[in-house]
Length: 306
Image 1: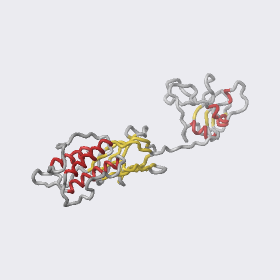
Image 2: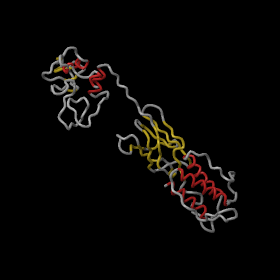
Image 3: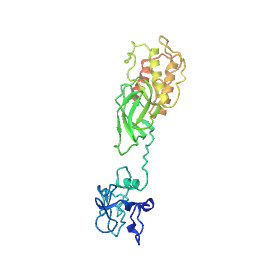
Image 4: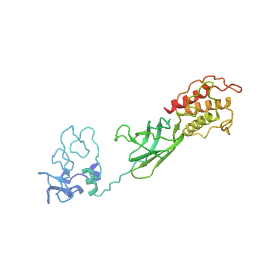
């Protein structure tokens, strides 16, 4: 294949005649060409001044290949005169193979992989931030990450040689679903809409006291906001709440609790979080709303938030 591309020397022919492109760059010293199988030959593109790589002069191998040691080799390039296990191409703008292909007429075209997010895990966390989440996809050439408009620190989870996963530290943000935006060093940004749900861990009347704290509409509204954030990340619209116009000062009823249970469990399941039975599973119209009805919903949100 190398010979088809134009690499190799005319010295490999049974009867050497016409030079091959690579032979135009064969030197033994500055200003001194060497087109024989004797002495030293090396690849140079500035009249022999700079020795880029030595050619093999061993007749049992190819004369146009790189001078190489016996196996195993530290760098078993495909252009080495003698093949070893694990050979690989080394085509870059500054490598001998890349320079050689360039001067015989090829153009090196580098492509930047398109940024891609396949998954975000976990897909929800606390509003205070500081949690590590993992994104899988394609992140070669990634420069910056933002979540909800705030800068997020990141690193390649398995080292820079593996660009298929990054670890991101979440910045603080208000409750809600946010976009994750990736900006490459060159090229277009990538936005994953509603990629992560920020959830509350502290609520109004954060410690509900039995016999002292009255269930309020605000308690329900805060939980609804968290559930709707999770639904957005799951690709759903806002929940079809019963009593959607619930406002401060309104009475909390059983339907408000059962709605939350239903939609929270559905969103949690869709996002891969576990669910479990509730206290008072038969809660229905006419039941007195207790501290535990609010508190267990809050605790499930806190658990998901981490």
